[in-house]
Structures are given as structure tokens and as C-alpha cells.
Image (cartoon, rainbow, N blue to C red; front, side, top):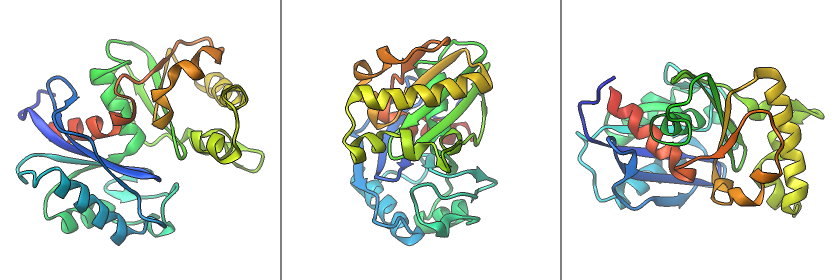
Length: 252
């Protein structure tokens, strides 16, 4: 779809941090500094809304005519959040899009956070020009995922919640697990290998792209992963969610 605007604002809400920036929609690059605040403890709706208002204020009072996209770590269907990964259970079956629109005083485009990152990478980054199935995974507080098939997003995949030893595999293999358990890179990558082997067996992707907080250190673990499909770091790294949310807002 041709964009009628040349810039938009993206907000990426995560389990650890809330980030925002102004995005050039033609180049897929940040026009502003990336603003970040810590995600409030417990991540309840009112507290998260206050933090989003804070990051937007720090961007300098962006004109409300500029489109705004908000990415969130949950299954998102018709503006409702149907899950709650690393945020308050109050978000489950919650009218989140309407809540943010009322609290921010403007229309928004609301999307799953990993799906936003996937859109950024297929339009402007590592997956651009790739046919077939690209699976983007975000490795941070949890594990998010996005499926892109021939350039089209298949929304709300939740590979981080594949079952492993009685719990979501993200508890075992997310970047936060390495930090929490004081694992070295080699031991953590062995956990990732198990995760990616299973995903590759199930879906036979043509390309993996890795984003999230750990993507700033691709040389520390990607060479140790042995997969049939190529695996690349996200070009936009931990800003992919901001850029993708803004890009989707610019489509509307």
C-alpha cells in the first residue's frame, strides 16, 4: 500500500522497557533519538499508559496529526489483548486499543510487538526481498515471533509459548534466562539451538531473523547455531518494533 505520509511515531511496549521514536517511513529509519523508560513494575494498564505518555512527552509533543503505532507484548485481535506475557494479567481480554486511544487523546494503530518488528524487517531490513517464509524471533524478556510469507504478515504467532518441560520455552531460552541464571554464551546458545531446531522442524522456514535486546551481540551466538535455513540479525535490532509500529500506522 502506498503511504500518504512520510513520517509516523512508533511506541514499543516491552516487559522491561517502553521505547518510542519518530520514523522516516520512506527509509525506515529513526528521525529522532530513541526515547526509553522502564516498564512500570507489574505493568498494569494505568501505569503503562502513564509511561507511554511520558515517552511521547519526551519526544517533544509530537503533532497529533502524525500517525501513531503502538506495539504490545500480547496476542492482539480487533484491538483487544488476549494474553499477557511479562505484563499484568489485567491485560487479558482487555479493550487495549480503545484504552490507549482514550488515554492518549488520539487514534492509534495497535499491534503485537513481534509482528511490528517483523514488518520493519521485511519492509526495511534483513527480510526485505526474501520470498517464502521468514520467521522473526525477538529474544529479550521473553521470546516473540512474527511470520512473514512472501511479504505478508501472518499475525499473532506465539512461538515463545511452545511447551517445554511444563512451561513456556521462553522461560528456558529467552535472553532474560541467560541473565537470570548467569549462563555463558555457549550454554545459552545450546538452549536456543533446541528452540530453533523445534521451530524449524514444525515450519520449515526459508529465513530466520533475530531481533530483540540480544540482537546487538549477534557475533556472540549466531555463528554457534546450526540450522538448515539462514539466520540473520535484525538490521534495526531493538528498534524494529518502533519502526514497524510506525510503518503500520502510516498505512492507515
